[in-house]
Image (tube, rainbow, N blue to C red):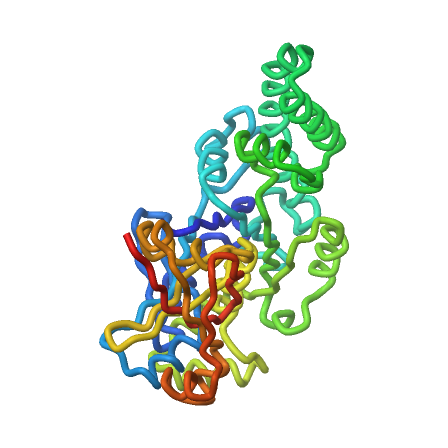
Length: 366
């Protein structure tokens, strides 16, 4: 099942334009498929040049990239936590995502009316944060009530969860998101996952700018960076209007010429997708054979058996060992046999921690 990123923001900040740019992203590189599985949900591959380079060497029958889902979530309005506008649907859709791409309008344009009649990304961010925090506060307060009696009985596990919920409550009441409260033990991690708090999800702030600001940003972008500096969140600058223009060109060469004229190395949506992938704390390993060259997604810190389980649960259950090559060794030596002859094909066991770019073959028995 694909991991899911939700695009959120106030009305008219560029969410749908961004989603449409992503839907046209297949036109911006040679192998960049996208499909719509619902009116506002798309499945898109994570651009990774390493996959194409592996395919050039192996010449497989099939190439398969790793994917994420991108969801265009309805624009939020004040009072969403009470169900105002599409509030209930909006909040439910966010709860189903693994990470949030928060689009902020950072450009002036008289022809595009802002919902609050002026451009202020700091205010816009705070509007959405406030709604999500209030909804989380409801969730946390409800959990505190349910834990209160059991915590008094002396159950240490419940006691730790109860104390952590009190910390969350204090943070939310202070106007801070749940992600600012550090999770320090398994009990806190368990209760956090159980509550599925909206503001505990990792977030990427996307500053939607005009053409003049797409390379170096502007004053609005600097305001956002200053505002989120303590959130451990990434800020990405993209001009969705430019991305729309890029998608209009018929050939890769024409698009590249347009990017060169703007002084940009690649389309912003490529950077966005990679950033979203990183935001979820994910990494890629590869399998490479004549039948298929494929990228597989695993969390950073995954063990070799866990990586095998991504292919099939039987691989993890019956894991014996993994034969591992680094991507750089394979590219340099041009074949698995050459890597082995050079003494650079490693045999790793159950405790091996997978590294980004590993090329792996699994031995298992079930």
